[in-house]
Image (tube, rainbow over all chains, first blue to last red; front, side):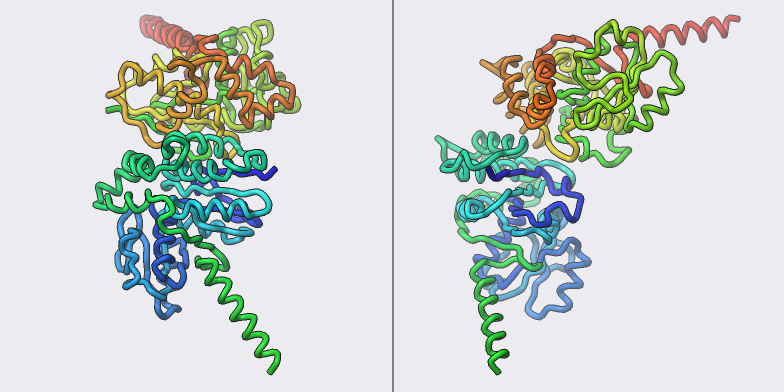
Length: 268
Length: 268
């Protein structure tokens, strides 16, 4: 039996070693893991998550083609190039660039996974890719809902629940859920599914009624909620590896290049 | 509109001033708030919650007719008189005694409420009393689920949900729920209710399937789960006031006695 645990807000993970050697899936539906998935699909070279604005600014000094991205409480950080709206991350703006990314909750969940065995980013826009990856993993899995500051967010719990639902469809007897995973599964079925299938329409309704959704609407980001609700609209898999987030294809090709370079150097 | 917030585990409240001047309801279905309700119904004079075993031992030295009560990870603390099973708290054992009580999670939630405007203890066994009290309150309300160490517990969330359901039946438009309160309401309806009414039978099923319920069964406490599942079987309202937990009748009569004593002293 593989165990799946869900942590309902990143602040519950308060020990740097807690996620060491674990398989981790980070979820921040509104909006970090959605926006990062969109950004990589639209051609960003890599995303470098930074816990704080100061760390983000420090990293950017040492990088060439980079943009400072992120928000605090939904609003773009003063002096940064981009905020946290997926709509800002068009190919024209971000193609081949390194994005240094710092948000209120999402990037904290990600950087807390720096010692993980594997870490991917999940959301509704890459639901099936997330599920496929989780099925391929050996060992237990931890889902980290980013939450909002110190509190629970319904959208991250519901997204975890839909992911779990899709994993369990074929392989129910392979997994053991803890209490919070079980609660998320129930909430996902109830608030994001119609006739046993995940429904973008129901998800949008849930986002519109969520605390953080309402807050984002009040800031003028109603359109963002639509993007965040669309199942499998960006079928990519952001992988956090060695301090940066990239698509697996990119990590693989770079690793190949490096080993070829090594071979060339050795043969010289 | 009155706001109702639910905190899904006591560890999310990490600031001593957070509950200051708030109306608080502490929930620890398995088993602290159930056991304390049973103990007061069976004639205990008062319960003094203690954060740690050391503090509990220190308090007991200064008190006469007292018993040391509590557990760590479900098991009675070595050298203590009673554990945390409601079955131990019979009239013969506890009548008129002060119980110094220290458990892994429940008493932490309670002592974190020491600066609250009001603090009561809720569970399934005193469901209606809890709901009536909450309806009588002015101002916002915070429900604190004790959880298990740093994690979520399904039984506390479901109990919060049933409490919320019963509050909203008549006065739906008076209250505003945050995301976690909304999630608990959904979980309560799904896992503790039958044909729109709370059901002790469904609650027992949920407790038997919960992580902590299974753990308690493994320790031999299967009977405790039955007691904890019975709606309104101990219709009392434990109130945490001035460092101790008592029934409101007792607090009132003592306050009257004190004020009479004052009058006598003054008239002398």
